[in-house]
Amino acid sequence: MNDKPKTIYDAYTQGQLYMGDSVHEAKKEDMVNEPPHYKNGKIECIVAMEAMLTPEEFIGYLRGNAFKYMWRYRNKGKAHEDLQKAQWYLSRLVFIHNEK
Image (cartoon, rainbow, N blue to C red; front, side, top):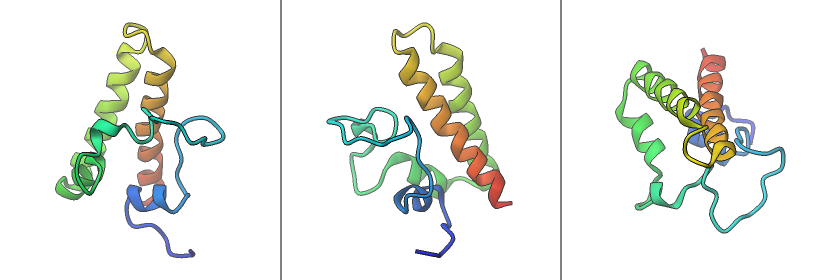
């Protein structure tokens, strides 16, 4: 597909944006890219957040979540997972920045 993605979700589902290790392997639960507790309906929470917030508010949301995971990564016993989650949010910030 040559169409430029309009949202972060579009980029992710089109294979243009990926977070985590260098190769995405199917896992029972992918707690970084697709945590099951964030997909209780037809769309993921991040998609609803992007749709309801202004671009500036969404950028703040992404920044805040990246900061949160970097702040506490040493304290929860899942440092690698929390750092991957921070990277997930930071990569979306980079994607948005590149779109400007």
